[in-house]
Every structure is written in C-alpha cells, then in structure tokens.
Image (tube, rainbow, N blue to C red; front, side, top):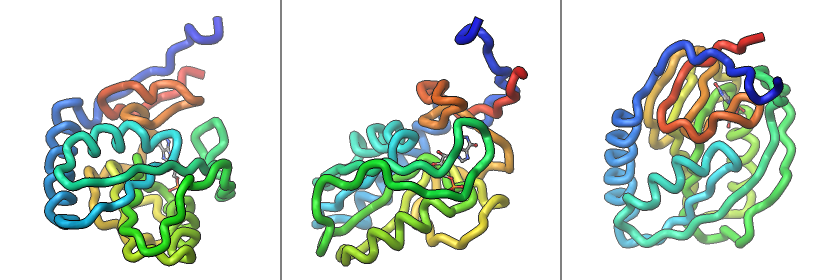
Length: 180
Ligand code: IMP
C-alpha cells in the first residue's frame, strides 16, 4: 500500500547529537558576528524551516524571520535546474542585514538565483548559512559564510530534507536508497 512502502535508510550520516552540537556552534558564531545588529533570517521553504527554528532559538541577538518558497526540484531525486518563485518575502529587505538559512546547497542553482534576486533589493548585507554542503555537485559558485557539514554526493533525507515530501521530520541526516 502506498504510504507503507518505506525506502531504505542506508546509513545515518549525521546523528541528532552531532547536528545539535553544530547548530549551537553556528548560532554562537552568528551571534558574535551580528552583535548589535538585528538580522533578518530568511528561510527557504520547506527544507530550511527545521534548521531555522533550531538556530533561532540559540541566537543571542535580536532577529526577525521571513520565508520564501521556491521550486527547483521535481518530486524525485534529480534537479531540473528550473527555479520558480512560489512565494516571496513578506517584508522589504532594503537596508537590512539578511542571512539566508538553508538546509542544503547542492548544485547551487537555487541559491545563486535567490541570492541575485535578493541583492537587487539592496540589503545592507547578505550572507548565507547552510546546514549541509554537497560541494561535489556544485554547478555555480555561491559564497557560503556558515556551513554545518560538508557531505558526500549522496541523496540524503532528514533534518528538513525530503524524499517525495516525506522524512523531513527525522532528527538526523541519513542516506536514502529508494525501495523501488
Ligand atoms: P540546488 O539548487 O541544486 O542547490 O538544490 C537545492 C535544493 O535541492 C535543496 O534546498 C533541497 O530542497 C534539494 N536537495 C538537494 N540535494 C538534496 C538531497 O540530497 N536530499 C533532499 N533534497 C535535496
């Protein structure tokens, strides 16, 4: 029955404890870097929400949050290279310190597109934080300021990342082998 066919989780790549420790370190670093400022954390839906909510609760600087929804992937495991804006930010970011908070940077196409679009709105600064960096797959260079973990070229799920919209809730990051 659909819904009962579980893909195989091949290997836990990053444990919950490792993720939480790293989130704490990133939050400390970001809090230091933005001391005295009030950054706007921009999360890219849907995958970015988990890292955003973990990170923001550990920040010691005042901050605001906003969301953007884009589509760059099909429901499977391969990139289409197409970036479509499904929902835009709710507030103007001109003159603001903006920090994009992402779950993963893969080809970099999505982030490159979003970065240029946001830069055109003239923020005071624009930085990028990603929990996972799949560097081997990069097609365009994107400057990343805060990286949680560099990971190998495998399709992963958990901690915000999905396979056909499922498994975002897993507190760890695992390599997925589709059971098909
Ligand atoms: P990029 O444009 O290729 O960098 O892709 C960015 C988006 O692709 C991410 O925000 C994810 O939604 C998705 N993605 C990339 N790699 C993975 C993966 O290993 N598992 C799940 N989603 C992924």
